[in-house]
Length: 197
Image (cartoon, rainbow, N blue to C red):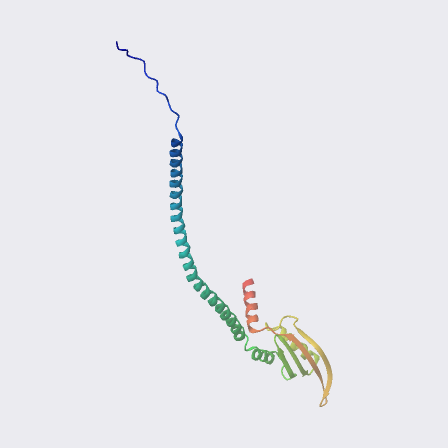
């Protein structure tokens, strides 16, 4: 007689051995290496792009440094030219001060009653030494000076006066100082007065 075992045979589950853990470890290491190498490749490409951009910018900086140096040189030359032109303009503007001063004196001096022995002109200061027939003529001369734009109001100063006899006539020797406005100053005074009207 034949016996049949209809019962299923129980399978015995063997625990996974070290080999399975080894392959799992190898797979994890491989995935980590693949991830790191992918990130490294992307970072290397980005680093190459940035280094190329840095090299390009450094060459541009070198090019622009030349232009910046040229611009600085041109700025210094421009400033020098401006300073020189200002000096030239100031010299040209008031180069005829002495002539204008002498013309002013000729117009304001009382006729046949005053003579100048010495006229000193330094910057904007004028000193006159001379002889007049009387104190009234000296005062008249001072008023005439102050009535012009070239001499400020109350800008004349009679330093001293004394009597002298000269061929039987009593004359007044005087010394007079006053401030003298240059023609450019007079122009600005007139313009300011016109603006205020």
